[in-house]
Length: 288
Image (cartoon, rainbow, N blue to C red; front, side):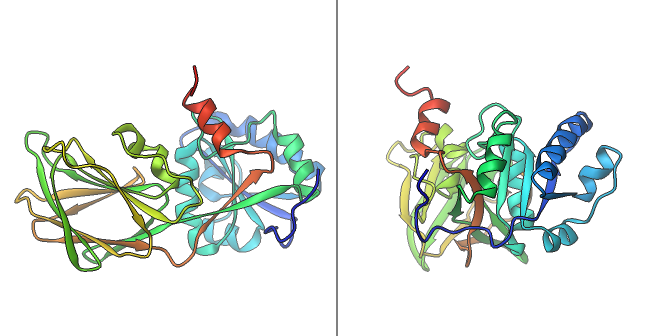
């Protein structure tokens, strides 16, 4: 296979750090197999501390792990990979996702494909995708998101009113169940389920999608990522802000959440053969 010029490659491929899906002690056998396969190719495997405790082994803190390894391996599904990418983001380590789940938009390597991928990895036949991340702040809380930020009503018995601004200027007021602010990577997640558009994952853009809006004139909006977006909560019951489906913050009336593109990107390790449109075709059963 011909290797393209000027592609991004790992400086060294000597050590990898493994993070396992939480609350899954049955993954010890899978970890043993992963360790055996990588070490057969002279790639040392280190294990993150929480994962190690779960399967009765010794490990390193995530910070120590990221300082020692050339790349990270997330073992589980897309949820596990989301967590790994967010927690390791500041260390700038590429993440390989091994898929043990079902859908797998992000994790594209199966255990059956792993031996061939390791061989290709050693021969520099792989690719690194650089995916847009967003930074957000709620009051004094700052966070990063890989998929999406959801602003949702606190009570199921009432709708929520949210005023949106772009670079300090009002652009819309949403009234309904909430708003999703998605990255292109996250466009196939919650955003897709409420009728938002699919956006190619290497694009730099925000997708703002209303959830069950009161007015049918409220439509999804795709905008360049160099804007700063602000959403002010107008509802007296406040709201909740959910980051990548994993972290939750409460926000009160007249308080705001601010969102902008992060100053660097998440790095994803993929098979050179991976084609995003084939993934969509397979996962969404297009044409069937």
